Amino acid sequence: MGIEFQLRRGQSPQGLDYQVLQIQLTDSIVSPEELGAIALPKGIDTRIGVILDGRAPIWLYGYLIHELHPTAWVACHDPRLGGVVVATHVKGVQVGEVIPLLPDGDRLHPALMVVGPPDSGKSVFSHRLFQTLLANYPNIYLQRANWDGEGNYTLELPPDQDPEVFKAANKGGLTERFFPYHANSILALRRQKDLTIVDVGGMVQPEKQPILEACTHYLIISSRREEVERWH
Image (cartoon, rainbow, N blue to C red; front, side, top):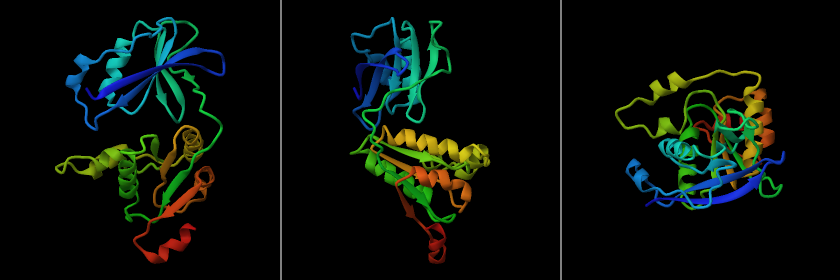
């Protein structure tokens, strides 16, 4: 079976005890048929909560949340935020509460910001770089810090589906909080991930300064040589 688990205990800065159920996919492709053969690791303490962590299909997360119903509470780890509580049976922990996970040390790992003018292939490059590195370096993250609706899902669609339709349906807009939010997310990711790749879209904007300050490196990809200087 291509799904394995590791269980460890931790404690939040506020003194809340929890368990982390780390999901590990040993095969590049897993299927829903494997759910019937899944066995949770022994030693899960139902008196305290469990935080699910790891890259896995949404249907696997849904199954595990259901199976962990007897525990005090269940959270899903978003490395940009912490453990987000999605189910609880105790008064001291609320749905929607974020449980901080302490990083291993205070080191900030690199973050690569991919920039350049529109239609230069930045999103495609970021996605392929991420997928290529992921096979040998699983502790990396691709952060889409733009609102154009383009994401990994638009680059992984079947050939008969138009990505522009999906982009239009998910397109957002610039707000005052947008780039500061992503800058904070990048800093949080840098404490946990060995490398964070950041796609910031194709416009030179002063509002992107927080993103620039949160990253350690930048890479300019341009289909037009005359546009390169604007991005330095």
